[in-house]
Length: 66
Image 1 (cartoon, rainbow, N blue to C red):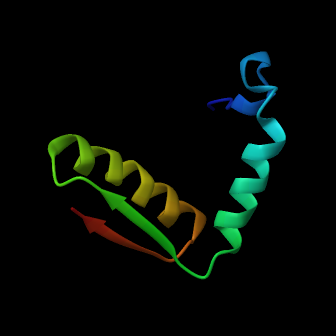
Image 2 (cartoon, rainbow, N blue to C red):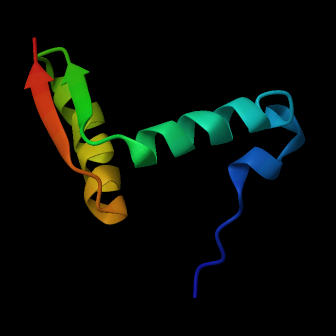
């Protein structure tokens, strides 16, 4: 079994821990998450990870490429 570490517990992220948790709570309480990315290979690959995270978390989302 894979043991996942909380990245925010690392010293590197200690200065932004509380802000990141606030943002995560805001996103998870939003009625709809809007995902925007450039219409490029990089944008599509980045969007795939974000969409997967939304699906895993059960968050409704819409996507747009520009």
